[in-house]
Length: 327
Image (cartoon, rainbow, N blue to C red):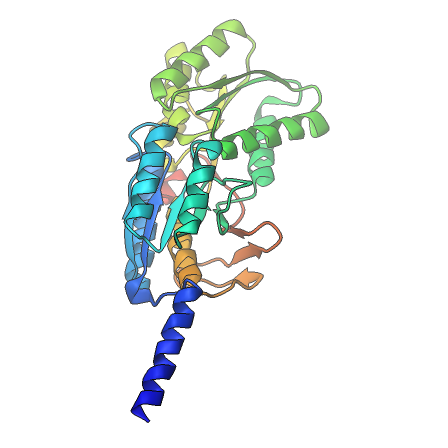
């Protein structure tokens, strides 16, 4: 009887191994953000660690010190080689990561994207903060409410290789062409991930276009530089500055009027959802269409056709509500 039982248990363990499943106590999850240490990714880490503690998962987060695709690749490969069950990544350059993701999968390591996707790669699924279209439409609709439908607007983004940022720019352009055909996007510039470069681009845009009405930052890294440029120009309240900015990054600027509003989501919740999803993946569980996650107030949505786990709709932060949020 003992021999039969032992064989049965061994068979179950072997089957579980072949399916790539694991128990929560053994699950190790790593996340590679686009850049280390900025408030946005610090908030993601706080949420992820809260989920890791709740669900008994080991969690590590490490990213490059600048939005450098080569450095991000080295960190990603390091986590894969250490045998983490799941490596999550917010890609700086999708094409750089595609072969690495394929190699990781061939080694039995699950790969998911979070915060930014790697379309066309072998990733298991994407944990998305909001739909790209919703983010682009929301930020431009809020802009038009304040500047009118025939204004001039500049866009300042981070590295041109970051797919999610390009998707948001495309959504903004789509919204402009279909709903606000008189609105003019006068420039789209890309920084090196520093506020100083964003400051320069914002200053240049205001100089070239004295009648500029709005500036949109497409990454948290651009937000302080844009706000500082508006402040330095003496045009606070005249130029509507905005971006996908965490409240902590722009709180003082929003209160002073140098930045008018911000559109984002709760990155702490995104980090929490990422770890929970990684655990479910490691344990071999599929998602329902609507996902109730223990520890999150709102249900997530599983978009099976696209393999996307969606956190929810965008949030708009203004001087009236920004103090309610601490990330």
